[in-house]
Length: 399
Ligand SMILES: *Cc1c(COP(=O)(O)O)cnc(C)c1O
Image (cartoon, rainbow, N blue to C red; front, side, top):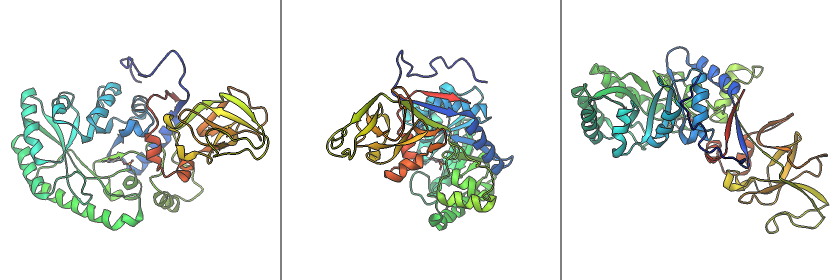
């Protein structure tokens, strides 16, 4: 479907190759979206959260792939990200900023029909001035405080804000009222999350009393979409599940209980990360591999040199633990992850040659490396590992 106006579709294209590459599966995304849409039914609108470079997957590619699946609403954390989404999305798609929008950029947002959160009453005056100057409505979402104590206005300011929006309807589109749940993925937060939902309903009651409703009431993230249907309202902001990850074991087990173990996997990882064997070394028994004394060869060994390091987003915590896939077999990491290199033991894998494909993340023959296999060894959580993948790694859409 999408268009050729993406003139610099991949800003990092060079004449030579990068040291690794990311592949994104359109088919896997389609399955995730179908599964999530079945959960939602026909009413709430699906907003794909594409903050942090689409959880590391790449905004340009993900926006296009999501539009191929019929998604037309995108949530970004900042104006900076929203501008990138704007560059790649179709004419009729909508973009929402959930976080930082500097005063200097409010005009840009209004001019481009970008929706944005307002969580300070004082800000509305400034937005009004900009909207008047442009003679265009600002599309605002009032974010309310329900118990996370991040951003979100408290009740007195909320009441003032709705009065203000009402008075200036020529310059405001009351696009939404929203909040964010502080840990919907964990059962241990259930009490707190229930309280948040209760408080959110009180804000909605106030709106109802005043007969002044926004287009969208929204509160649900991935975990809430999967486990708490009462939170769906009119729009849902789905991040991690869009990319095929269960928000937590709690949510996964709940799904298994409901669906039964025999069901097909409804969620599928989109991302694979690959590179190639750069060199092969025979290491005599007793020698050290790489920096320092982190790894000593107990036998004569054969190791593959891999042109990726912590500067490429490969976690240093994988040193001497974790593995890569070569010729469909697991090759354990030997020694420290360096800035641009690491080594893996291929003594047990016959026939490895320079240039062979190395899978860092994803599937090769009958083996798979999941993001969770990284997060077992390191302190990283899924989102952190993914969102740190450098933008410079080229990303390619595959079937
Ligand atoms: C990140 C984020 C989401 C999406 O959360 P997931 O758990 O990844 O679905 C939703 N809303 C807000 C405000 C967020 O910051």
